[in-house]
Picture (cartoon, rainbow, N blue to C red):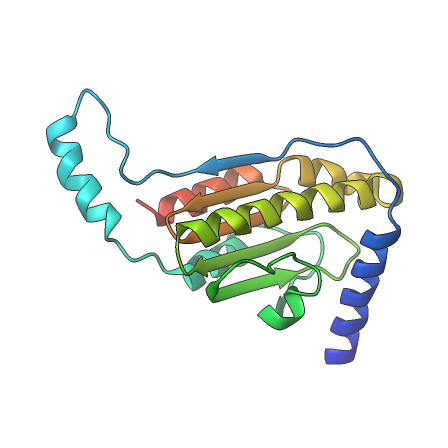
Length: 183
């Protein structure tokens, strides 16, 4: 199984290195500001924002929900952080926890949920995610064009020290799962 996973990862890396230049796509991303308050409900929002700001978010539960509640074309397999660093540009990102699931390489589907050291590292992870989606879009445009809509609708969400990437056929469901974890 490890040899198969490594072969798939090497194939994905080779695929991204040799991919043809395609049209640049815009990634849909969301930043959740847990301190944001509505003007109509300032008083009650103060208490809610204070509670949410300190709320611990279960990153593993988010990754597990994304994996189990969304239908994927390909089977996603867990990937350790050291392996993921070979194809995700996390050079400057300080990561405390990582939950990463990758497809076999036949599809663009993937889940990356990170708990970074701080919000600066989360912002760097977001940049790495945007670069990953851009590179994957270029790669899949000519080789498996059916996957490009998934990449065009990739969900990238950052909040505090959390950075999350979800590439699936159901970006709306992915957004709901992730945003729900922060409420």
